[in-house]
Image 1 (cartoon, helix red, strand yellow):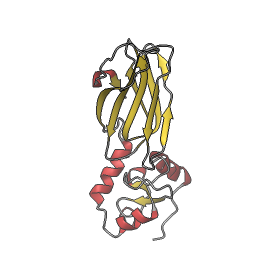
Image 2 (cartoon, helix red, strand yellow; image 1 turned 90 degrees about the vertical axis):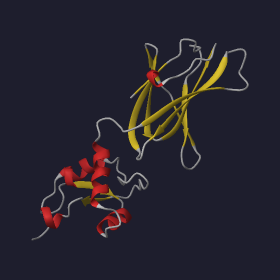
Image 3 (cartoon, rainbow, N blue to C red; image 1 turned 30 degrees about the vertical axis):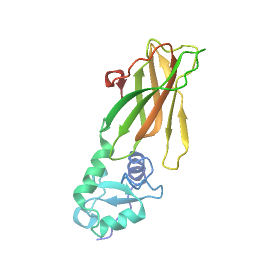
Length: 190
């Protein structure tokens, strides 16, 4: 039986699901192919639930059995999770040399640990009451290359919402306020 082409709209949907990157979290290569989790020869159809975006190297490793079907199905499930599977930890750090004119400078460190990269992720924190409203609140993270990415929040009703291109690792929320307050996980939502 001749294998038909994967329809363009279906390809687009699979690529969007994975953020146009390899779905394997430790890879994330931007050159992708569409792979069948259960081989096409067995199912003889193209179904979204059975398709995943992989780079050519990971696709070959999967086809050769280096990556098993159960793992591939988990990678697919991770992509379609409504809510990311995250391990969040909030830590408050007092900066050693605060600026006396603006109050204490503090960093709230939000560690986001996840087995895969989450694209287009948003989270919110409750802004401490002691935060200086005249100074900005910033968020930064360092990527694997050591480059720093900065994010500015949308602030409304005492809540700062950050939209990040991908989540994973450690995010530092920097603000100035009059007294140190502790950030807890009750102050964070996503």
